[in-house]
Amino acid sequence: MRSKLFNTRMEEDIKIRSYYGKFIFNSHFLVFLMIAGGVLLYTLLGLRETLSPSIYIDALCAILMAVVLLPKYRTLLKEADMLFLPPYEKKMTAYFKRANLYSLSLGLALPVITAVAVLILLSIGHGLTTIVLFFLLAALLYFSGFNIRRLSVNTGAGKWLITAVLIAVNFISLLLVLLHPYFIAPALLCIVIFTAIMKKQSYNTISWLDYVQYEKEALQQYYQTVSMFTNVKRIDKAFKRRRFLDVFLWTPKADKFNKKYMYEYLFYRSFMRDHDLPMIVLRIIVLFFIIIFWISNIYVSLIFSLFGIYLIVLQMSQIYTAQAYLLWPKVWPVKRAYIQKSYISYSHKVVFIITLIFAVMFIVTQPAEFFYAFLFPVWGYVLNRILSKSIYKKERELSD
Image (cartoon, rainbow, N blue to C red; front, side, top):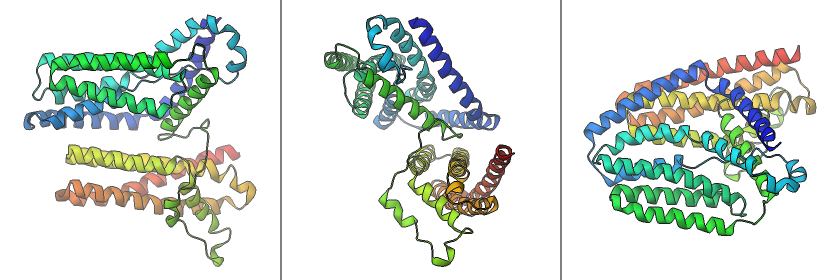
């Protein structure tokens, strides 16, 4: 029974991932990944020929691996399980073993891909023995980190506290090995101590409430990641006021407080008050700036800037699908043409500002090729037009 239960849950989760995967890894995105990966690989190989051994390179490799070695843990439990499964707690060993294997497989892709880039950087000033020890320790940290993460769910420890400690332990351990191979001993000692602490803190019985809540948060985190690329119906929508963003909102004047102009204001307000969207946009801008500043290659800067704009414009379109024909028209019914015109006005203005930010970032990193930055507003405008048309097409299909 336990095997059948887990297999059913796993098949359901794989089906969800496959469904959203076909939207994320479309032909355009795959072409971008191939180009970006080739350019990145070419740049790293070029850096290997020009850079000298440095503690900064070692620290960069250690922090990259420390972050990507964070394991995923999915139990695939549901709220109803808190009622029906506790009587079978002692017979759930096989279920959780299968969940462990499935969870381990979910988090392997990113460390493997990152390890390729790190391997190239580690070849600067390090011998084969040190590199082998580094990756053996990385593999050990991944599996021990997973065990710690699994144990922490049944301890009541804060998720973010465990994540911060895991990153710190991973970083220090990997950096110590790069400084001297013999330092692998204290690194292993840290792993043993951390694991022993979590085992001691773990409850004697399963805390079903904590397990179910952890699974719910993990699933929502997955949906939030997917929402950066496509619309997600299952995600829990919430709104949050950030006072520092209030400066970007205004009170409409009396002559603008009508059906022709109010929807544009509502679009701005939803964007600023959205629980995730403003921070997603900010994270994309900061992350891509770090990448293009660190690599400082004209092709990398150009490709990542255009792709960053693409991601943000894709995010912007979700405001329309989430709000424009679900709630607002019921509260304030107007002609669809007013809503579409308001969205076009709102989205073009916001996208233009975002493209200007990317243009400034590009000029800072590539001042000699500043003229390429003039492409960004045009790229943003074209993308926004194309995505808007696709939204309106889906809307007409839904209304027919």
